[in-house]
Length: 494
Ligand code: AMP
Ligand code: ZN
Image (tube, rainbow, N blue to C red; front, side, top):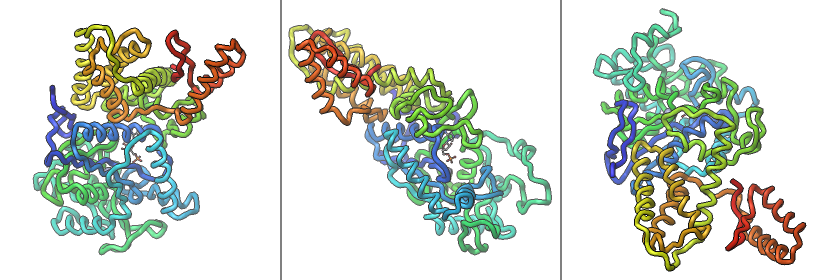
C-alpha cells in the first residue's frame, strides 16, 4: 500500500510524508481571530485539520497539535494599518478587549465540540506570548533583517531576499507584481519598501491594546505570533503547518520569512491549505455578508437555509469533498448529505450490536475479497492526500454488507469470523475515530427501547391508534420504526 502522501503548497506536489522525528509529529494550525462568532467557512478549515490530526493519530503517530487563538494584532483589512479587530469590537460593545476574546473563545470551543473535533494539544494565545514576540523583534533587528521607524518595526524584505530568502515562494507571488498592486504612495510610508510588513506597531493614542516595548508602547504584528508560538512549542523546524487557503499570502509567506530570518531554517516541512467554503461561488466571509453561523444552521434560521441541519450532517457534507477543492454550500447538497450520513449512522448503530454467530452458510470468497478491498481502499484514499471523499465511498461498500446482515439476507458465517470482525471493527473505527462521525440524537436510547416494547404490545393487541401515536413520536425525533419480518427496531430516518 502507498504510504501517506500530503500535498505540499510549497512544492506544489504531493509528497511522501516523512516526519522529522517519527513517531512524533508537530502540527501547527492558525486558529481563529476571536473577535466574532466563527462562521461555517471557518469550521471547514478546522474540520480538515481535525481529520488530519485524527488520521495521523490513528496510523500511529504521536501528534503535538498546536492551534493558536489570535487575540491581538490582527487588524481590520488584514494589513498593517487600521484598528485591531478585537479592539474595534471592544469599543463598539463598550467592554474590555479580553471580554470580547473570552466570549468568542467560548463560542469557538462550543462550536468545535458540536462538530466533534478534538481540542488541540496546546492552544496558545498571542497576548500570552508578548515576551517571546518582543524578543523575536529584537533578534530580527540585531540581524538587520528589520528596522525601526517611528516606533514601529518592519521586516526588511529586500535585505532578506539579498541574503538568499525568497519572499513569495509559498504563494507564487512575484515581487514586482506585488509592488505594482500596492496602494501605498512613495514617500508617505514609514516603510523603506512598500512590501515590508510590521512585526511591531506603535500604538496610536486611541488604540486600546498596547504593551511596553523597547520601541515605546505598541503591539505585535499579526504574523509574528504564529512564528513565535510554533517555534516555542514545535521547534525551529516542524512537520506540518495548516490553515485556510486565504492565509497563504501574506500571513504564511511572512511566517516563512520571519522563521527563516530568525533561525536560518525554513520553519515548516509541509505547508497545507484547505480550500474555501463558498456560497454561490463566492468565499463565505463575514465581510461579504454571506456567512452564516453554526447555530443558525442547527436551527435552520437563516434565509439561505430551507431547513435545519445537524452538526454531523454538516461534518459529513464537508468530508464528502476533498479539502483542496472549493465546496459550495447548497440546500440540495446538504439534504443529500443528511440522507447519506443517516444511512451510515444506521449502519454504525446496528453493527455495534452485532456479533459473530456461526451458521450454515459456506464462506464466500468473492464477498470476503470485496470487503477486504474496500478496507484497503479506505486507507489508500486517506494516504492519497487525505481523500475523504473516496474514503467515504468505501464506507458505503461496507454498509451494503452490514445492511444485508441486519436484514438477515446474509449470514455472518458466509463472511467467516475473521472478515466479519474486520468489517465490524473497520466500519466503527473509520467512521468514529478517523472521520469523527458519531451517532446523533440517541441520548434517550433506553426510552426509545421502552417505547418499542409498548409498540410491540399495542400491535399484538391491535390497538393501532396507539401504534400510530408511537410512530409519530419517533418521526418527530427524526427516527423511524422499522417493522420487519424478523424483528421490530428503530432507525434514523433516511
Ligand atoms: P480568521 O478567524 O478570519 O482568521 O479565520 C480562521 C480560519 O478560517 C483561517 O484558517 C481561514 O483561512 C479560515 N477561513 C475563513 N473563511 C473561510 C471559508 N470561507 N472557507 C474555509 N475556510 C475559511
Ligand atoms: Zn497564523
